Image 1 (cartoon, rainbow, N blue to C red):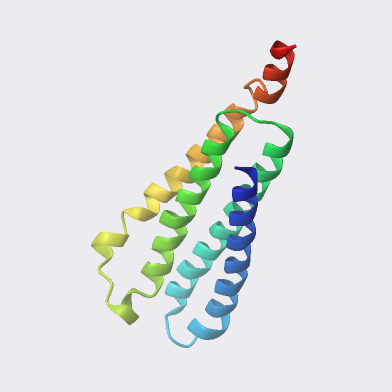
Image 2: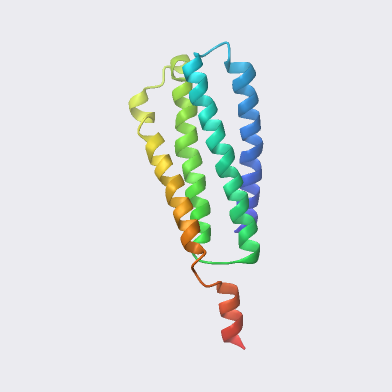
Length: 138
């Protein structure tokens, strides 16, 4: 599980940098300033939460709790829903994307981010399952 989060985090960080460059150089002439700001917000939140995935992956090397991987999956879902919907909203005029389908995904993604951080916090109160098993198996 930890390698999955490390790989996903690294990949999504790289994609964040690529999307940021694409927004700054490729979209600047094609979409409005407001739409570009929406796109940049998507990139920013993707990057922050891709780093959160890396943190979850690293933490899983030292601690294993049942809730920590849940936090990682919530961060991933948040990236897909929140950042993905912002990317689509920012280019909606180019591809004639109906906002009625995409718009509700943004706050849902935000809730996933919040839940991920709360679950990560809660996981620090759980006993480390690796130590627990080792202590009781002796």
